[in-house]
Amino acid sequence: MRLALLLAALLLSGCAARDQLPDFSASAQQDLPATYFDAVIYARDGTRLSATVFQPALKVGEQAPVIVHTHGWGGWRVTRPNGFYGTQMMSGRAAVKAWQAGYWVISYDQRGWGGSEGDIEMMDPDYEVQDALAVIDWAAANLTRLSMDAPNDPKVGMLGESYGGAVQLLASATDPRIDAIVPIATWYDLSEALAPDSHMKVGWTSVLLSLGLSTGYDLGKFVQTPYLKSADGRMREPVRAELKAHSLTSYCARGQRPQADALLIQGMRDTLFPLNQGLAIRDCLQLGERDVRLLGMQGGHILPPPMQRWSGLPPFNNETVLHCDGRAINLYQSIISWYEDKLRGRKGVAASIPDFCVSLNLDQGVALQQLPSSQRIELPATAIRPLSSGLLQPSRLITLQQVQQPSALIGVPRVHLDNAEGLPTLFAALVVKRADGHSEVLSEQVTPLNGQASTELAAVSAQLQPGDTLGLRISGFSGQYLFNGSWQLSSSTLQGSVEWPQLLPLQPQLAKH
Image (cartoon, rainbow, N blue to C red; front, side, top):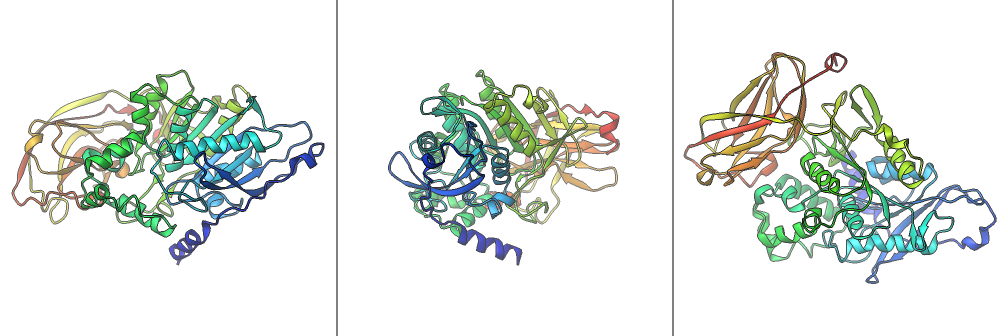
């Protein structure tokens, strides 16, 4: 019933905005009340974009920066404070809180979604990115009492998750007017995130396509031949090239980095855009001179059971508080503090936000400067039958380490194979076998192995206790990659080595949780 109501909300949500821009000249010598209204913004190519503008309460003489908010894939703008996106989605809730904290907020439907016209172009620099800049142009030309850096250059923050996170990175790399961004659970390389080594995450592509259909997505992009052929589970090269060109990785490769201070929030259990994507974004931004911080929460893009365990309404959920070395960090307060520091000039307000913090679970996390260094062992020759392993027969588990003391595991494992070229497609995951006998896949992350001598696995984090055993699980089947198994009847033998992060001793106050 709950899912049916959600679908109904999705279908009814995408209404086109009617332009209700007030005549601000009539209230030039009056206090402005907190309110909101719809607006039509014309993109640089003439496409009509639907937006809702949240006007803060401002006294005569007061000014406020503007936050440009936009939605994730299959979503829509915040149309009212108590609507679905403003109460159920992380970026929508943060947008409402920013408005309540005294910021102008413009929440707009990206082209092809909600009430906006145009075709979805998958974050094309000539379309979606230019649309975001057109919203800033509109704000500078139409809003009153706007804090300005220069003519046509308001003090601008951006906010959004997933699809709405990627547009911030590319817009900031294009336009220096953007001062502060908060990308939540987004990508560095969309091609690699959707299809590691060209293996499509079929579980996720099915969910994303369903979201697109339920919210009126025009299938024009997906009926192009390269996209249709990729439905068999293998991303075709034209698709890979297009998605890579629409990603920050291509910008960074040519030295075009985001020019805004960035608060990155990524999810450890996010099986669409894992922490690896946030780490790569951070690496790119740190080559510049802007302030960049990275918070690794547990939530993010979460597949419905049984592919992932239930932790809230899929496909996106998150916790409110991130625990970091014994401190409870409210993520929403951190976002507002970021804007207060970077847009209002309240220097030091963002000092409470660590440079880098990774959650181990919902109750604890660890502050870091960099990821721990790795350790490496040789893999024994291991025979596996891809057709049945992980489906009809148990997966192969290779023991890596016995845990001797309360510890934190945080980092990016890697598998190196001596005979990778001749191996069928296999799937690797870091696993912990607890002292009580039950096993769990760390951060629920699985990565395909195929044809590569060295493969970076998805980043993981975990709290470990004495008696736990770390292992590498190898299987021929994964529910996250339904069409990608080789289904090979005969056995194959893999050998090589594996790297995994060195364990960090946990302080007593953290270990006792």
